[in-house]
Length: 482
Ligand SMILES: *Cc1c(COP(=O)(O)O)cnc(C)c1O
Image 1 (cartoon, helix red, strand yellow):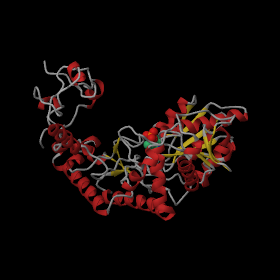
Image 2 (image 1 turned 45 degrees about the vertical axis):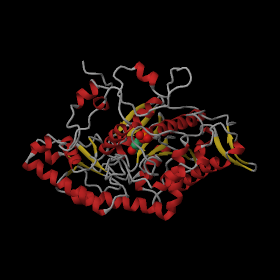
Image 3 (image 1 turned 135 degrees about the horizontal axis):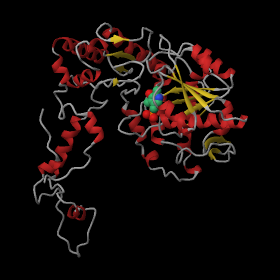
């Protein structure tokens, strides 16, 4: 492995990537040429164009990404994103639209938004969708605000939100941000919501139950309809975190499972590239009772065409600027339309098949806490490797040496030393076999040469970092050597 120097280390005084013609006017500080900037920054690197290009191209090769290989990050749905979606999102007709353009000039854009809303309603079995939220967690907050508004309209916003211990970590945060007290519901030995615990906890103080389904173990909450009845009987709402709809698309609809509010992550299931901070999109689907409270503006079909409706007296208001992350919605719409109903169903079928192929392939080599069948992901633990002093982090770091991205670690919290694997439907059997082989090799190394694992990764620019120091004393700025 060649160590790529810092760009400051390949700097030579006087080198410049551009040579401009001699000035025939008086010189002024021009930020565009960088002269002023360079003059003002001590030690600013001076390099040739070829050096800049090669430096950053080499660095880009050191980055791992979904276009390079397998990315089994559980609960994140890191699937391959078809390039045709990018092509559509890059069309000048869309990229050149001004967000303040009058409605009559952007009928096409509004049609994109409305069609996406309508198709999501069909896919999820909900009555309406808002595309405004910028991410999953933002969708959760929006969904909880809708529930709170509906309860207020009924006379009492209530105080408590119930959340199972297998929920995604953003769920309690969103409920809390909305002003609710969070109360935990236990999982039973199947890894599902304990109905007795739910029955005990459900009261007329409870605004909603937030359930991730399939939950973070990859287990489908088989009692979801019964759960909905228990919550509804006391006047509460059933909120479903559908960030990972991969397991269900085209096969089952949350709206048919007594779910009142649901968010989905377009940047997961619906094939928008994600990671590195966005942009994302976390549309929220709702049942009829909640429609009056939708955030504004609402794209509405009228005889004169599509309009942005702001005149909604019971709205929760705005949750962000404009109508959401348009480019993300556009990619998702292109993806949904290219796949069609059959293709959407295949996503779920193959995502579930792939996860179970890995589960079967690694059974016995890695410990499975729950025997319950899983859908789109499976959660192993490091229990067997712990006998040799090897932890999940050692396994994850070693995977990097095999050219593979590690799975999600130490989550869900109910599995100690978790390794949460979500292969998604876009991986071939060859890719899955390569991953299984690597994991088996690592299991053998744990028994035979654990020191190799403890020192991993061996094949990267940067080796094992001290994560505590990195988190507590991050070095975020380069400084010239003293
Ligand atoms: C990813 C995820 C979220 C949060 O989504 P963001 O877009 O990262 O805010 C919420 N719930 C589940 C189950 C998720 O997998």
